[in-house]
Length: 225
Image 1 (cartoon, rainbow, N blue to C red):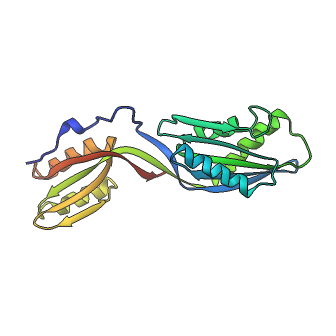
Image 2: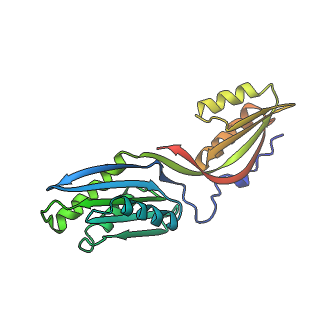
Image 3: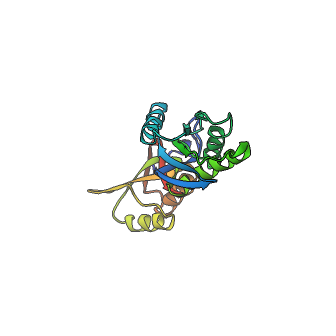
């Protein structure tokens, strides 16, 4: 008899979002605008302290640059955002950089754009375009992932049904996190909220209710973007 508890299905924890994008691997990119070099360096960060530490590291690395402007977004809902023009005219660097991160729906990310002045003033519009494009160039050289909200599920079955279950999981593109083959087979799965209801129902159907299904916890997990 299945122990599947329908009360778990579709019940997302309060204040959680279904999904958001993150960096799997940071990167950098560079553009040149009227002989000024704009170098964007992008990294993951989990806390404000992480972001500030990274910004300090980049400022130390590019100590001889005219400006090291920065922006970061932290939290699944983007609860914490900060940006700095670092001496550029107000609103021409940090804010446009932050808008790129928010527009890409990225979270837990920090970017620093280093400018080596080329001797020609770009004007307000030119600066906004240059800092925006530099961040986009940096992001283009990063590896992205998507955090999805769901949970870990434990699937218990006998050896007679395991073939059908594995076939069904393969059809849904779900690969078990772990499997234990003892007196019975126990699979651990990671499922998004939208996957869980239909898949659990199908598991019950194909085993005539013999499968045991239990949701162990709720969590975010990474999928490829």
